[in-house]
Image (tube, rainbow over all chains, first blue to last red; front, side):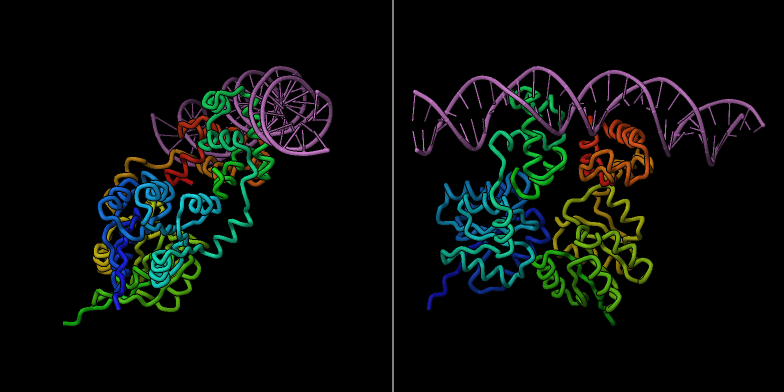
Length: 205
Length: 205
DNA sequence: CGCCGAACATGACAAATGTCAGAACCGGCC
DNA sequence: GGCCGGTTCTGACATTTGTCATGTTCGGCG
């Protein structure tokens, strides 16, 4: 019986977690961590160099987030399955992740034992999404914002005044105010700043 | 030769990390993890029940953050040394932590090996603060905000309108605007929302 | 004591923001 | 074609927010 060993790439910016995880996964006979990375670009480089079977990526990393890395991997190493691990799961991220061809999506609240199982699951070609995150994503639904509304809201995210947003979006100030207003009412917010916060929580920006 | 074993409490909301960490620390002969917790209140309860020598606390946990837990521990279990571990260290947090009697403060980018050493360090009665975080804290300096300015800014943190802030702070609207304005100018922000963001980054709210 | 600076507090005015009604455009549909 | 609903875009108006001048209180200091 040839137990196939799964070659794993581990990417997380927190050394403490990455190291601990590598140690725990190594206890499993059929898993071997072939590479580690602390940033998005580093994860990509490591993947190219080692061509792992499964890439375990943190969602929030310096440089490029897990979904962006997954998109690049999809193009360059289609055989490499991606499993995203995240601390605070926002509904929109899950959608984007699945669109990027990610095979698994779980919160960091799972146990290491469970993570090992999931690595095998995605390696076998199956998909797995944490039920609670999936429920959140479904109940949150799609973004009700139109393209312009989302664009303007994104420009407003850092607290810039309307005049600056108008300049960056090449729109009249009145138009910008209008979009911000309609976006806020769609999100049930009283002003654009809470609207930005809500859209962030839902992963819509 | 009686090697003293150090009894450790581990608190982190991410099960994956907590479990991995517990496993790694258990590899050290002189360390034993006697309790684990996923939230602030849970950490307190566990500490009361097990009276550990050292408490390793995540800074951001549901319920009550690491510093608040540390404050309570200081009062109830003065013998228990607190070591704070954080993912994204903001200067102000370090100051608050030290004021709360915390003995160690390190980012999650340290290795598990190093963490084990630091647990022994604080158990021995010494202090340790990550040099980089310390440098950030020093360069960021103290908060230039007065008590009222900070209070009002905190109420404004969720994007509430001035009228609501005024009500919560029991101040006239004009007064609230005044504090927000002076706080914004002290922080070099153009409006209160960017002021909130900056104060957050510095850990001053 | 009398003076000074800092923090606290307020209302009036100017500027930025939110709201509204409506015009132009586009795609689907009868 | 003609109609309809939705998105995009705009300026005018009302509201909210930011700024300023001013007054008050309080603690330190010559």
